[in-house]
Length: 328
Image 1: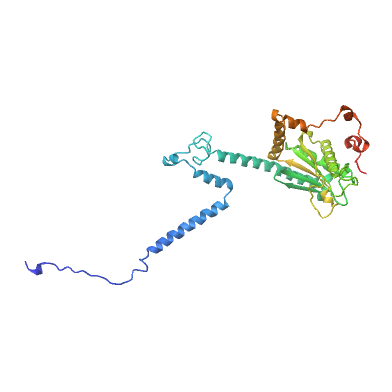
Image 2: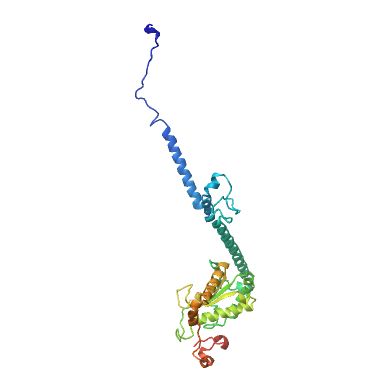
């Protein structure tokens, strides 16, 4: 066989040459994937920061879904109405998704509370504009929604004090203001706390005698009676408090008229329940055999019956019975 019968094999080798940059264009694809991932990450972070707490809670519950339910492509293992499968502290129980259901109930209660108190606020604002007993004293009336409920403040002014100077007796227009507010306050079942406040001017007798603490409590009780005479149910009151000058609105002067005021707090249900729960807890605390000595110690008894029956001197008599204001 001759050498010409075999085909010649030629091998070509290329040296150098460019490959379209660093290893071609593959780095561009990797960079684009990285930028897409970063954009998705920041988009998720932005959505989470702008979402409501309830929405974030639902997202968190979604990722608590039991693995066996997810692998079986099944529905949630609980029987709640949530569209999110599983979730909650005990997803196998019938209640399931306990945390979410609790949050939903709290949110619904808060909405009902806010709606009812906001409605009362709107009604009072309209009443102040229409009722002449209130419209002439708009600068003395302050309304605001707080965490504890709807706060109504009736403040003094330099020209128009709400009570006679140094006395627990309300002026006729103060009595008319309270009587005008009573029907609106009576429409809601919410409980009420009534507080009296004074300025910082001291009494001549000092702290040991009749002073701002007694005066603020007397004014609060006088306001309570005026509200009841205007039609407010007596059972709506949960607390009547004398605050003296302990909570000042303006501390620019001892005799600042803004500090002489009556505040009416229409409690939210949560706020009123907290007060009643506190009182109930104290009652239970002093009703156990272990705390019987404490209850006995807290009970004030006269030294002897003769001391209890002995009439008080005029300066110490109950002001509600004497009708005096206790001033020097």
